[in-house]
Image (tube, rainbow, N blue to C red; front, side):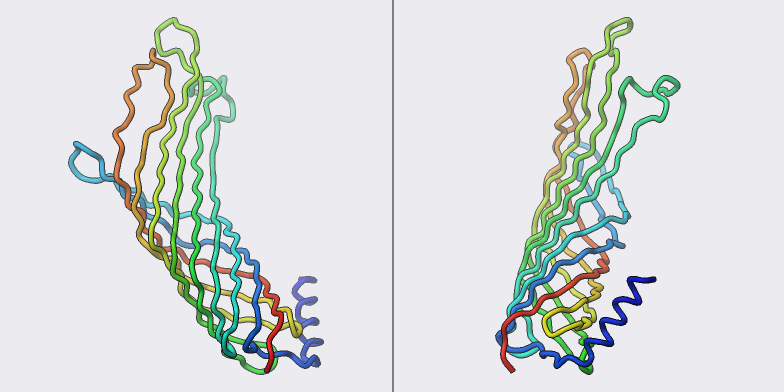
Length: 249
């Protein structure tokens, strides 16, 4: 609550400052944090089997982004949109001695998404402090996912424990886009806070490979390589800051 009051006081004080507009020739530098409220659908085509295996993942995570731009004309920003999304989860049994799992068993799932592409944003000033803006970016989206499980097991009755790792890796890339809008609050001539909501989409293609490492005694047969389609449908909510330099009215 104290932080909110502090921001409100800054906004009131800054109303007395002669605030620069989104001028021609200005540069915008920004850093952002997102909360992801959308989902990703992964569809794997399994060779030599009938039908596809579909999985839908809905999760919450944190995204770090930077959007930097130049204003060639007043209110119009043209630049670069880069965002990095790293999400991971894993677990292991609470009491290994009382569980049915192998010794030292644990498993996890980690995903990394990267987007990079040109950005367009148009500011619509409302009064001296507030400005609305639509924005859009098109570019390249990459996706990497690793699902793993590891532990120690006696694969032969009466045999010694042997280490193993099951590791399934998906790599994909292709066209992606972001489209949305938001509101910027100018706290001074060169500094602003903004809130953005945007939809992230795109459909990319890749491969899923079985890179598991089992001892020969396990008799493990690796899964065949699969063609994988990744469909993005995320809703990103951003709270960030902007710094403006240069420019002339």
